[in-house]
Length: 233
Ligand SMILES: O=C(O)[C@H](O)[C@@H](O)[C@H](O)[C@H](O)COP(=O)(O)O
Image (cartoon, rainbow, N blue to C red):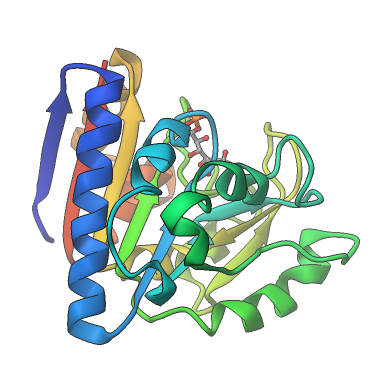
């Protein structure tokens, strides 16, 4: 299992800047090495400041393909849409030249829409070059939620994405599957606050059967390459 590097910053602003610098360097290296870079970003409340710091970085954004670690099954202009969050905060300025792969369609449910999203995601570099993961207070990451009916299948599926109905969160979801997440060349957990730091540290230490472990632990244990945690209080 690859090692995990902790990067602790003295403020959220410093975290946003340091993480943006780190991601920009990884994207530039991927472009220089393989001619393109694939990145999956997470939604939620944490990433907006980092997105704004990242979008002005000098790199060949026309060679970057952006998608989401997970998406809520809502219209892309919905207040809860991760696509909307990403378009409004990341895909601006220099980063406006990047290609974005949307994970929502007009299908009536995530489960009905999954095959078309799977086909779109085939355009991503495989493995992803950069993966940004958030973490919920229940230890979920992407839309791999504890106790979700589809959790175990999404943790072993050979598909790129899966449809999930979270047990206690709004909206059906599309999530990248655990094997897809774990294959990324750089897995970055982006979290803030003492409680999430304590939860992540506890999750990494717990000795429980696989099916009882927090999804964030299951992704990090399966990650094949570099793993990083970027944190500020
Ligand atoms: O669609 C989502 O909600 C995210 O992808 C999800 O996995 C998020 O990263 C965590 O819930 C943390 O969210 P916060 O940053 O808001 O705490």
